[in-house]
Image 1 (cartoon, rainbow, N blue to C red):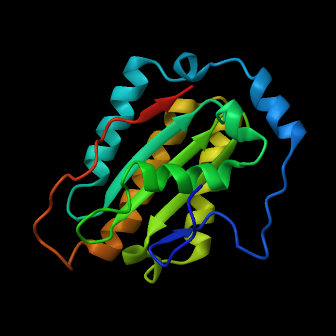
Image 2: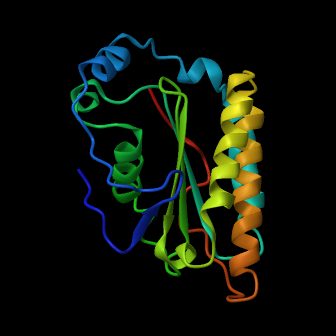
Length: 186
């Protein structure tokens, strides 16, 4: 479990006295979920997402990491919900460890049909909650319409636009610190 620090911020929903309760219903839902991530995202889809990340990272030092997960790990689903999982992956994958504190994690959980965006502290002060909520809602609406590839590619492009607005003129030199290929977890 990752503890909240000043270095990260979950921005997909307001954090108002949020207490995560253990849930047998959530555990059962994830236990019975049939792994389908690779069925929804073919190799060509994954390549298109990687290309979108590469294009979205041009012109600024912002770094985008996409994680698509079919369901929460069964041993964690009873106590952990998607927000906590996104925060955990943000830490485990080192998205927080970029030179300019410019990491963004786009986390999609297919079982819950939820999208979480975790941003690093360098971006937190320059953006507003509504911007990230709009990106999440656009992705979710396209996922509901079963346009999986388009949902992720469009979401990545919007994140790139936000990063360009914040970072484009602050630093000229850019380094690709995170892998551009999406991480697919079943």
